[in-house]
Image (tube, rainbow, N blue to C red; front, side, top):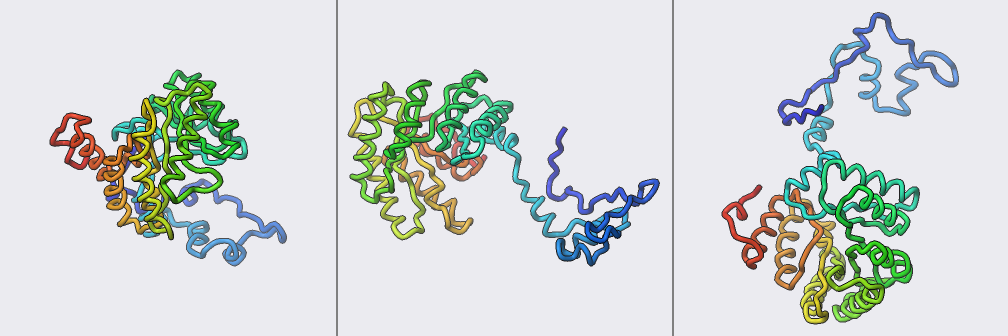
Length: 317
């Protein structure tokens, strides 16, 4: 059972069981002298405030204000977060393991199985480890979930050889990144890579309808960030005229504001997602718990006649 307390009801002190025991606990011994450890022995390892909490005989120990502040932030566990993402209107949950070099397959199996306990939403599996990717796909199929999105491959030879065939083998949708050994600044170069990716996928029997192209967003604050932002918008406009039938598009939206002060990230994200939508972006990897961003997305869908407008679309919820 779990209780989620509001900030004003979080306990302000820890209960110390030691004074209530029928007999005192045996003291910890110093590994060198085999004598009871005192505060001076612990000082090189722990702050004095923490040592005081450890040795006190008081029945209640005040929780430091800085710790209470962190407890008040309440970062939810992955299971709680998955539930909240689904409730917030998420279409697909992205599971990002990164390289997952050590025991990647076991890690992917665990995460997929854990998330599946609380959500039946489709999953997007994000890792550069092809062994972990295949393990995740098989686990998803074993659990009876919708086929996952493979995230991602690029023009790099190892991704072409190891990741792309998995999407073909298991008939999954796949995301292609417009990059080779580097990310080009020029929109035309990115479009050329996009063409290469789509042709490679088609040759393995993956139709355009199952391909997402990610033109790759970089932080606006880096040296060429603004040029990259302009290129992404240009790529989206060109892609809509290149393929028949059209491929889909996506991006990691929050990359655009990475490195900006926290207070400035929401407005940057909100403006850029509207620009991307007007250029033809069909999806984006976003934080569905960001209520302002989700409101922007709902209004984009309504104002572009993709959904029936409701007053609640304009409300924060």
